[in-house]
Amino acid sequence: GENVEQHPSTLSVQEGDSAVIKCTYSDSASNYFPWYKQELGKRPQLIIDIRSNVGEKKDQRIAVTLNKTAKHFSLHITETQPEDSAVYFCAASPPVPTNAGKSTFGDGTTLTVKP
Amino acid sequence: SQTIHQWPATLVQPVGSPLSLECTVEGTSNPNLYWYRQAAGRGLQLLFYSVGIGQISSEVPQNLSASRPQDRQFILSSKKLLLSDSGFYLCAWRGKGGKEQYFGPGTRLTVT
Image (tube, rainbow over all chains, first blue to last red):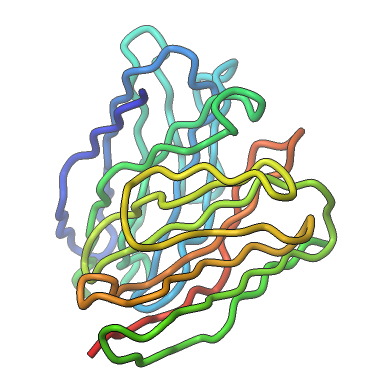
């Protein structure tokens, strides 16, 4: 089955700096890679995603890059703000008919942005 | 638009008591449904998933079970809770033709 590894497990940055979280996956059939942000006590919220036919996607201060050959993808947050502090999860998903479209999640990265 | 509900929001139950958590989805039909558990400070563990009414697949052996009596209803149950069942239970859905997966608000279960 799919295996997703996420690094680092904790990340602390100064406000205004950039933060980068990296994930690797093992199953070449995975074609959809979402990122979720989970604030304390709340549900994971989808913040950005990328599909396998795209190498990079950007939404304001957040960007995701995908290297299908190397099977890794990354989340980039620029100009970090204290409200970016949360746990971030990456995931890899096959097309929905395959394996019921189950997403495999990384173990999460706790991001702390210091004011 | 689609909405996913879970209840109750919080629950405190003694060891050995039964459990029933409910999840319903609105605004979509024939979704894939998933139950996850998240222990404190940990990642997301997939417990069960369902591709249709009455179709349940289990990811990990345990004392929990799941059922899908209606297209947009997903229930997580236990006959006798263990201390290790404590956690944050999240229901999620994903459309058959879509990519995105969305989570419900979750149920925080404490077994005492």
